[in-house]
Amino acid sequence: METIKKLIRKQSLEKLYSTLSASRKVYAPVVAADKRVEYKYNPAYAEVTFEHIQSTLSVKNVVFPKVENLMYYTNNKVDSTITDIDLTKIPEVVLWGSHPCDNSAYDVLKSIFCWDIKDEFFAKRLEKLVVIGLACHQSDAYCFCTSVGLTPNSTKGSDILLSKTKSGDYIAEILTEKGNAIATASPDLFENANNEEAVITEVKQTFYHEQVTEKLKTAFEHPFWVANSLRCIGCGACAYVCPTCACFDIQDEAKGKEGRRYRSWDSCGFGLFTLHTSGHNPREVQSQRWRQRIMHKFSYMPDRNKSLGCVGCGRCSRGCPVDMNISEQLQALQNI
Image (cartoon, rainbow, N blue to C red; front, side, top):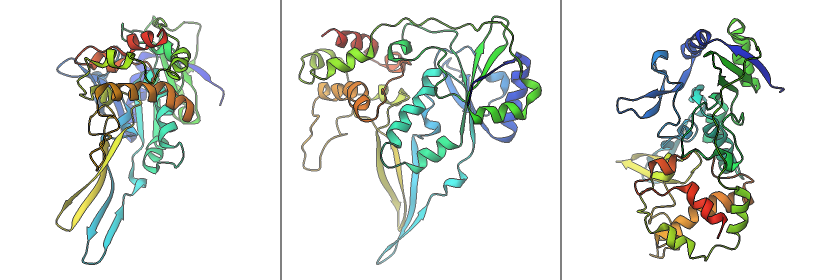
């Protein structure tokens, strides 16, 4: 649909939040006791922050939970009885105040989970999701969205994008039918837009992802990987905070005759991730696993999924215990 631009006063924003949280789950950012920003379901409006640069964890768990049951089973003497998960019970969720990098990551995840065979769990959660995004009026040295084709006010992935103005009110860009349904249900809260401009932070471009992708075509055996992965301890923090990483494991957990099959987040940075039953491991050292992480995001995915596996949020660099900065590494890769 064609974008509709409205104005929503800061006092009206609270009314909109209250209306939405009265009828469905609203997942919104708050500042925790340890000062980290985290998302919670239906926090009081007074707790919700509009001043965060980035939450510690991404919001991918709304459509790709850390642990998700796939089925339950009961083993009998000669066969097993399978009980499927009732996907109709997945609730509607409004994601509130997430930044454009996180919102654009849903398209990246969709290119993975719906690439060939549609993952019905992911697809149903995405169908039940409405995203009311918040353009960035602040950033830090770790942000690099402009180097991966995005901007601090990208509308990609949002159903409504809010942009703060100097007066403290918000410009609301209504982008999809989902967003329009919310706006039309509360017409008194959305006013005609005036000429006031939004406050948008500046994020300088530090590399060209197209050049990185081109370099990677001939860089598989380059000494860069060993030299730049010596610090990596393989903890997997980068994958767990990443909004686009989608590696998972599937396990059965049983007690007596009954059990469940579930999937949980995993990381290609772990040494056991590619360990074969035979004992062979095609990625037996950390440099090979670091290379896989970069190649997957900037070479394999653009080729196969027609998407880039990075949205420039910078979480992996902020969270790395040995200070590996992915933006700096990509700048270096561009010039090898």
